[in-house]
Length: 152
Image (cartoon, rainbow, N blue to C red):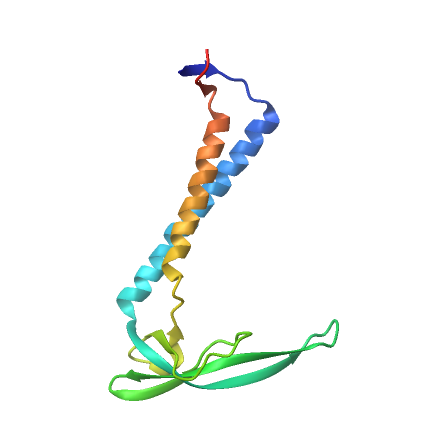
């Protein structure tokens, strides 16, 4: 097992440099997302809320005149000792009444700032780190002038 010299073409080097830049952008984006989530966790209050109702909305597609129905949960939670309600985001599915969700809100303005926390929120930054790391390692392997060889 040893290193052997390897020559890369211009196209290989160019694609490796582009891949390296994309990988570094993904890693930087992962840090950015991680910092946003960490900031929200430290500045906003987190509590559990209950879906108490659902609002439906019909939308007509302009291209084929097809109607779709979307639903938004009405969520109730306790903020500053008072019961507070807010409407969540419209989705293609209806949340069942009594369903428990995690809420983050600003204690100064709980009604306008409340939002449902996505349970997979913490995985986004790690996925970005992983994709970026694979792109960087792959690109560096192409850019390096030597290759690892196991044969004689």
